[in-house]
Structure formats: structure tokens, C-alpha cells
Image 1 (cartoon, rainbow, N blue to C red):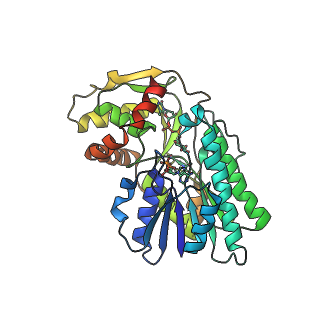
Image 2: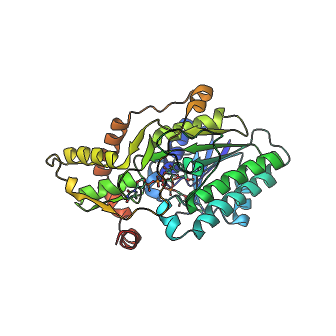
Image 3: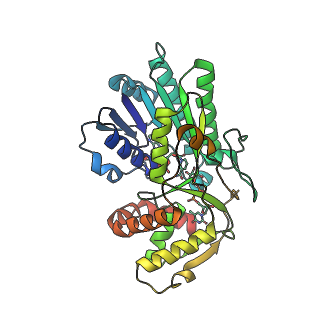
Length: 347
Ligand code: NAD
Ligand code: DAU
């Protein structure tokens, strides 16, 4: 198996690649990543010399380059994670989300179709997507695999477009595909523009914690290594043409999660209980901020026997420990460009 993983220097992709390299020594795992601001070779430093692993810096939008890469490496399988992934950036700069998430995915699909056209046996294109394509929920209900799409940010609209293209290539050309839509991930190596690592970093530095709106939005959190295990399971056991929802059945209102994060981080830093509460700062809400996401993950549990392995408090504690122990990583990714983004976004 020559397996191409795209976006493997990013947050989730780096966990997926490390998981696969350790578990499948007989595979050749090719990690393709453009190394944008969100991609970081330090995330995958531990596997760089493994025999079953190689890294290619390239752009998924580059048709010529993708054709060459598929041919040179005789790619049999793709796990496609490369994307622009941050909702706030999609609001301030939507076009790169369209080119990367839509054109980039279409480019990979086209190349897979061309290169596999003579024989689709033992080939698979796995597209990793998000629960945000389903839109937003009120106080009740869940997202199911057949929930109608209703994306509401440029990010989720671009991911929804890419999902449609993947299904279109399956229905029109018979391309063997599988998809998954996952809820919010957290864990080590997440770029600190997303809620949990951003807030841990700000608590450490006693900086304001910018809570959007009233902090009443709800997200369903899953530990990233559980997502990596789910991706492995779906790639190997999922039914072609099917979609699987992945989630933790772990809903948290933002402000409750933030208070827990403050409590645990203060404890670990040896600070008095409640000493960082004053950092909470309510700021202008995100434009079009989706109220609530919640995944029903019954299908993947019943059909593929996957379930989250970690309780949230345990996962959150491990995550805080990791950021506190990896200050150099945090300092290096928050220098330079990050400061400009931070200043522009939060003022
Ligand atoms: P991330 O932003 O941390 O990583 C994305 C990676 O893609 C980076 O390494 C980046 O360099 C690479 N990339 C960007 N543009 C590229 C291009 N044109 N060519 C090649 N590589 C490029 O994102 P993440 O949080 O790890 O998310 C990975 C995937 O999972 C995305 O498709 C995202 O939509 C999906 N997802 C994320 C979450 C979450 O909570 N983070 C939840 C569900 C689904
Ligand atoms: O649901 C899956 C999605 O989860 C993924 O597809 C996305 O790639 C990923 O970024 C994530 O999107 P969210 O917008 O939910 O994640 P984020 O960490 O940006 O925000 C989580 C919640 O916290 C959301 O309600 C907005 C809020 N928030 C976020 C930031 C960065 C704040 O209140 N303040 C902040 O500064």
C-alpha cells in the first residue's frame, strides 16, 4: 500500500501520520503538505527517519505536481486532510479557503480518477471533513449522516463543496471514496488560534481570554488521538461511498469549558484557585457564529466498533500538561506571523 496523507504536518494530520507509521510498517506512507502557517515539521519530527515514511512539500492545487506525485509513488490510497481550517480566518480572507478546500480537493479527485481509471480495485480516496457542513443546532437534536447540509461560514461552505465533489466523483465515475464528518478536536500540536490552545497560552502569559458573544455557544469535543483512530478504522473497514459521523458525545458550552480550563491550568501552574478568572473578557461575537454542534456517532459505533477512549477531563488534563511541557513549540509557533494575526483579529 502506497498511502498518501495530505495535510500531515497540521494538527490532526500529524497525529494520523504518526499513528499510521507506527501501526503499518509494511505501508509506504507519503505525507504531502504545503507547510502553510498551520503546518509544522516539528509536529512530525519523531518519525522523519522511519523507513516507511517520506515527506513531500507540495500544493494540492497544483495539478501537474499532483499527477507527478501520484505516478512517482504509485499511490493506491489517499487520506485527505489538507485544508484551510480556521473559521475566523475564513471570515477575514475567504478566497484561499475556496482555492485550497474546493479546487485542491477537486484536483486530487481528478488525479486519482485519471491514475486509477483502469482498475479501481484496492484503491480508496478518504475525505476528512467536519460537522460544520450541517449548519447549526438549537438546544436539542443531533447531526446525523443524512442531515441536510446547511453551511454558514466560508470555511464550512468550502468544506461542504469539497464533500459534494467527493460524492459526485463516486456517483459519476465510480471512484471508490469514503467520508467522515467530525466534531471539534483538541489535543497536542493544535495551532494556538483555536480556542483551547489559544486560551492555555493566554492563561500562562496572563493575557485576556477573548470570549465571543456571551460564551453560550456549544461544541462537541473529541481528543485528537481518538479521531486518528477513527480515521484508521474508517479507512480500513468503512464501506465505499459511505459517510461516518465522528464525535465524542461531549458537549460543552464555551464559558463552562473555559472555566474548567482556567481551573485546571491554574492548579497545574501552582496559582491560587480562581486567580485567572479575571482574564475572561467578553468580546464582539464571531460573525454568523453557529450556536451548537452535536454529533450522533451511533453509525460508526454500531458498524465499525469505534468509540472515544478518553473522558474529557482526562484528555483536557493531558492536553494542558503537553502545552505546559512544550513551551518551546508554543513559543516558536506564536512568534512572527502569529503576532500580526493576533493583533489584527483581537486588536
Ligand atoms: P490544520 O489547519 O492544523 O492543518 C491543515 C494542514 O493542511 C496544514 O499542515 C497545512 O500546511 C496544510 N495545507 C493547507 N493548504 C494546503 C495546500 N494547498 N496544499 C497542501 N497542504 C496544505 O487543520 P486540522 O485542524 O488538522 O484539520 C485537518 C482536517 O480535518 C481539515 O480538513 C479540517 O477541515 C478537518 N477537521 C478539523 C477539525 C478540528 O477540530 N480541527 C474537526 C473536524 C474536521
Ligand atoms: O466542529 C469542527 C470544527 O471545529 C472544525 O471543522 C474546524 O476546523 C475547527 O477550527 C473547529 O471550529 P470552531 O470554530 O468550532 O473552533 P474554534 O476553536 O475556532 O472555536 C471554538 C468555539 O470557541 C467557537 O464557538 C468560537 C469560540 N471562540 C473561539 C476563539 C478562537 C471564542 O469564544 N474565542 C476565541 O478567541
